[in-house]
Image 1: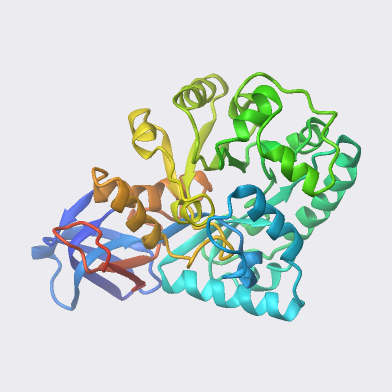
Image 2: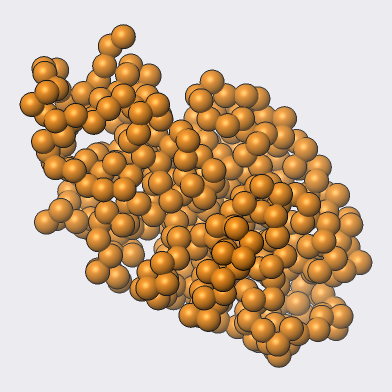
Length: 403
């Protein structure tokens, strides 16, 4: 068996940063064998300037919306953004498929090895069947009116069954059929009746939901007000059936994920400290793991706002990173997300940022047995981050796969 020996100024293992006196050893297929002292590594060492990291995990993407890049103006606010997505997403299938391919190429070129992808149709199946990336497919379910709950559930179940047929990979990863769940779109778009229908599909799975992406989401649940009322009117949805809970949106819906192993709370731009405390309480009570998935470039694109990162860190919340879609972002780069976080929250050390982008994401998507860290037997990919400044990610930093 032949081996590859990789050395750089810094080596991030998935949990800590080692110095240049360490060498990463892989076999010819990229499976990790060991990390050893450079003095014991012998010859034929490939040396890089920069930092070597496990491949990035993109925990939240909408690959099927890749054809909408640049279509929706920036900073419209969430209601108008959602309305534009619903009314403008329909393009010729050939254009959509081509955009999906190019978007996947972009993610691979940016060092991404796995994706938590939102699916509202089956158009991404042909590309995913090539198994160039590992995907956890979240079949998104939405339907605010109680009377359409069964209709919407049946349609999503059709997509769920189609994705469950993806063939078995030879990469050592769990089979694609097991990397699949139903996922409620958002608190303001799923009725109680629809929640009841999809709840059995959470069992031991990872699911996700768009959470508190705008400052008026809580208003809907606390007192029945806020700008979502305008959205319902724009979409000609009769909201008169809805009864406010008197609690934040998160506290209103989070217990409905009972049975899920992991839950990704996506965006969290306007999450409150009391909600973070509730997450920790419910996690302990139900033996579940909740992850706040930050998509900071999308938050900037849509709302021109950022999530309370320091508050999350203070509460020891599990954090992962996502890109959202090309409809709401300028690109599909985890490094660009880390740059934005670093720009506004400079106290977060690079080791913590990279942990959010690697092992935390792998754990959230239940892929930690194969991805996320440099541990023997894993095949996590190897990414080179160049252009660091004083050992930190800088605006000029770039990322590319080397294995």
